[in-house]
Length: 262
Image 1 (cartoon, helix red, strand yellow):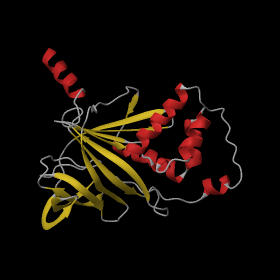
Image 2: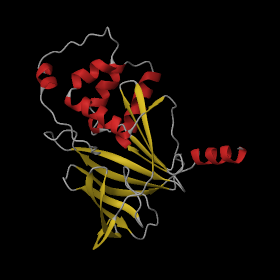
Image 3: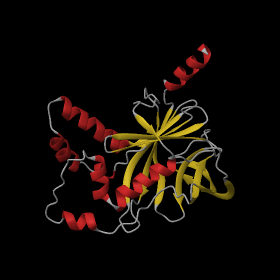
Image 4: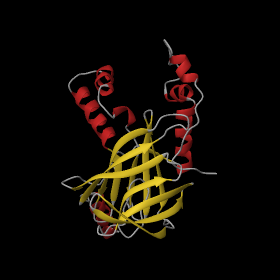
């Protein structure tokens, strides 16, 4: 029992050995524009953490303003002037934290949600194509994964089976990946040393749920934002819409989800 506790503690304090920065392109609705986010994959000896750099900067800005006596409106005013802040995705993906699992977290309103599922492996098809990305020779692989068809270019000279988002399992680091619809893609922009960044799942107030449930939250948030906002506010809260806001909230939307479940 003692050795088990020690191993869990050591894993929780693992330092990143490498940080891979990606340009992430995604659509939140099928009718809407393509958004761009800057995201980071921190890779340790056995674990990894994938997150939005823009979301990290937003959180740091919010805490700084709060600690100096500023208001939420002060934060929103500054945040709106920062490039990329509106496209910041708030989810986090941890691999092997705990061992053999993929842990996904996100926040909807004040509530945090977490899904933890086994790493069952991705059935990749290794193809003959090759190219050079960021100075690294890469090979092509494809897979049907979580409802979408993915094509991934992996660097054979970087010996890790890691990749962006929930992608993994190739004989080399995934430097570029895109789904067949063109609605989601990740493209490497730079590879850095890990520094002192720790790979650790912070916070403990998460509601455990399935990946399907988290996708349902995204769907409701996108397709019926007013109902979603009402659902996370206190029962007696009132929402006052001004200007063209009623038209914006009532506009028909179809959620574009990165994971598709039947």
